[in-house]
Image (spheres, rainbow, N blue to C red):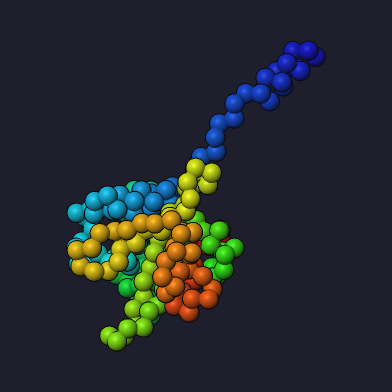
Length: 195
């Protein structure tokens, strides 16, 4: 009986093997690595003609899937304006057909995960312009705050990054992800990553 008790005690105190990481966690981690690497130096594999805010998201997701789940790339990740699979989608089309809105409030901002998107719509003399920023949030929130990473859209521009909470309080109003900004469309998540 004592041997059985000791065996049970040893089994209970033995280190538990960590659970295998899910595909979702691995994909998000790779998206973060890809976009943060673009801040330092833009990857030559990211075609110069596609270097804008939507292009950064397409490149990061496609690269993450190539590394984690290449079989998923047997069909395009994105949907076109008619809802058909497509390799290319501009910012507006990505939002409407490949991402789902999460909300626009502070609670939603706090719940964002890496790979989620902030979306803005600005009216200019030349027409409506959509702009996307990608969220990078450390898995262990105690070690670093959430960031946004984005390409400003101008040819030859560098990829930029900043703290998400600073964007909400210090950016010009038209770029603040807050409910009283009419140009802020909300926070979005890739539909395939929704439960």
